[in-house]
Amino acid sequence: MNTDPTRLSAAELAHAIASKELSSVEVVQAHLDRIAAVDADVHAFLHVDGAGALDAARAVDERRASGEDLHVLAGVPIAVKDVMATKGLPTTCGSKILEGWIPPYDATLVSRLKAAGMPILGKTNMDEFAMGSSTEHSAYGPTHNPWDLTRIPGGSGGGSSAVVAAYEAPLAIGTDTGGSIRQPASVTGTVGVKPTYGGVSRYGLVALASSLDQAGPCTRTVLDAALLHSVIGGHDPMDSTSINAPVPSVVEAARRADVKGLKVGVIKELGGEGYQAGVRARFDESVTLLQEAGAEVVEVSCPSFDYALAAYYLILPSEASSNLAKFDAMRYGLRVLPEGIEDPSAEQVMAATRDAGFGDEVKRRIILGTYALSSGYYDAYYGQAQKVRRLIANDFSTAFEQVDVLVSPTAPTTAFKLGDKLDDPMSMYLQDVATIPANLAGVPGMSLPSGLADEDGLPTGIQILAPATQDERLYNVGAALEKMLVDRWGGPLLAKAPQLTAKGA
Ligand code: GLN
View 1: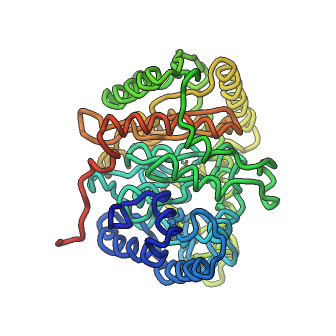
View 2 (view 1 turned 45 degrees about the vertical axis):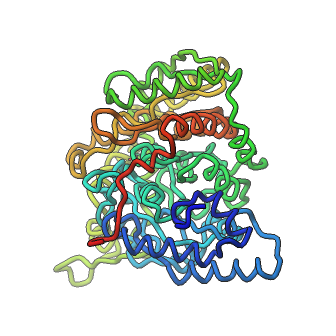
View 3 (view 1 turned 90 degrees about the vertical axis):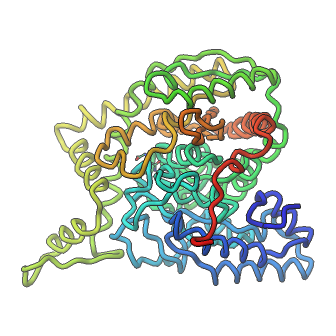
């Protein structure tokens, strides 16, 4: 077995810890050392909680020593996107407006990680309030892609994908409102899953767009994602949109990995014009592999997907403008007093705080959303977008009458250079053209590395989509494809990434 714990998958770590080959303290310490060595370059963490993680690891080791029956992932550490409330640990959402805020409670998902005995290494960097596709909109500086530090790690959850790609954590939690788990996975050569809407509790997830947000796993393997999915999934009475049904049997599905007789639909509208040649080539090869493994592949048309981006950029800002109204200088975080006003009103303090505390992208979306919801425009914009949303859900229903899963490239390009799209919001928004339909319809999606694009040698991904509540299908197909691809590459794709070392080492 590899002696460096940071190179093991979560499943391997779980096994090593359960069989007492490694203690949780050793595993956590190895990851803290790795973070200390490379995170100055990657900048994937906003807060590292070394003491807390070691305490949790020690507690698990003691419970194991006393013979207690523990959860399969007990002792395996994890990093959490800074949009999830963590009791006693800063939660900034990548924004200055929440600087210094320490939540008095844990998100349900975080409570479940703790209950499973998983030490939390820290909180990961993200675009401010999860708005973006590059993690450059973080108020705390961008995260760098471990494959090439001059490039973006995707967004909004670039930190969570970068920590697993850089071996700073075996597992991480992301959130996906329009693609923020899947697109970062695609551009960092890792696995990312957005579960069915309602499959993972949103209680304690600081809302961007409540009808679209969903938390899920960021990992290096499909099996690891399934193991994590089963910890965080399941009904929660604290979230009124939580599905009241058992967690799908995703681990069994990942172990099954058999696509024989399955019908796979290639989405006609995703993958043509605007997609990089190497992204398309690796996607086509993956589809051929599925076919060779016994799947039947057909082309499926989802005509309304062409309008998904436009509908999303009305629905998301509308919900965001309402959700972000609570950052009013009265309840949380930052409070800025307006200059030159002796006895400012509450409104004046609010305005000064929001002006100083929110970045440009957040302001842009609040303005857009407020406009779209304003009386006289509501029907023309928000109402119309909701109708398109229904058409997209109908396209999915029709498609899933014909096939078991749908596939497309995850993102149109590989990782672009930091700064390249910062002044061009529209081209940044286009990064999510393939991922957004799943959020609008609430269906689950996975991104899996499909290889390296020939033109730049950077990773790219294939997206797998399934009907709502049928998350197992993603894991079955994903694991089958992963096995074939890893065989073809002669090992995991990440082994081909330039190996980061400590500065000056
Ligand atoms: N990039 C998309 C956006 O900026 C997706 C964000 C997300 O999924 N959180 O809205």
